[in-house]
Image (cartoon, rainbow, N blue to C red):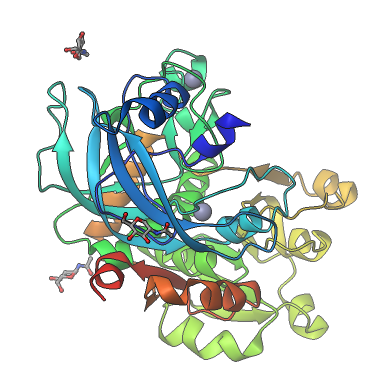
Length: 385
Ligand SMILES: *[C@@H]1O[C@H](CO)[C@@H](O)[C@H](O)[C@H]1NC(C)=O
Ligand SMILES: *[C@@H]1O[C@H](CO)[C@@H](O)[C@H](O)[C@H]1NC(C)=O
Ligand SMILES: *[C@@H]1O[C@H](CO)[C@@H](O)[C@H](O)[C@H]1NC(C)=O
Ligand SMILES: [Zn+2]
Ligand SMILES: [Zn+2]
């Protein structure tokens, strides 16, 4: 099971650490072989890394020393400063999707500063503010990769719980530039939560100013969908089962209205009023009430990942020429475009900054959706304590 230890895909850097993870950008080598060599032949080709790993489906994170390959010609090594905590991290830690390889060092909303750049790298310099999101590798030759859709590559390498099968170069292709006015802490969650809602809005044509967008679920993804929807000039309604979130949805996040999903009278009065819905709910839930909110030709895109199938109500789809779609993060080019868009519109996540020591408590709270709206680990300050 040697390759499992590599799941911690990335490469990364010296004393960096993160809470949930670190990263990497790697170069062209066989990670497993490197690891093996490192054990027998010393550490000269390795960089030390430190993170927090879970070793079983209790999902409890504890300190973990590991090593990554030394920076290659096409690599960028970064010092991790912040890392957002995504619901996918929790699903993976607890093996809720059934494909976790332990030990796993989670985290895929990573921001920091480049500390090493390979000699082939022209796009980044040491000291640049950079980010790493959900993926760190892909084949670069398939139809998806050629269309800047690395996120749908059949040979995608995720930032964690994935492994580098052989010779894959990671390279600068998977490193993102943080615009100057985008903060590294509140900007980090954009690397997963931001692109997850931005990409389907662009792809499915859900950006026409004046149209009405419903955002189902007001958590990490939903609160950013509200902000991005407003930046596109949409009318935005939050659809949530938590009536206590109404005032902040409207007053703090800028939504135009709020619909309590388990209030039948309100749901009924909103039937047929929406052009688009982004469904961020990751628990099993009925689609029929949401589909009913759509106008004829309306589009519902689901980005949450419930661990059981949802029932598909065919009648309203057919009778209203409605569409249901899915979407998973975005390619590197579009992710950079999203960061630039958010910087231009001053969009960041609303975060609760925590230290790494607080990560297990934070995970408990996340499991109960008790976070406004994203935990971000302050890696540098955690280390210095
Ligand atoms: C990690 O390595 C450092 C330095 O060698 C050591 O002080 C620390 O105790 C190690 N931590 C764990 C969890 O192994
Ligand atoms: C990167 O560097 C390696 C080793 O110096 C070289 O063989 C390779 O051609 C370079 N790749 C590019 C894209 O320049
Ligand atoms: C973003 O914030 C800056 C600085 O506070 C401000 O000058 C600018 O007008 C804002 N832009 C938008 C689109 O709100
Ligand atoms: Zn995520
Ligand atoms: Zn590919």
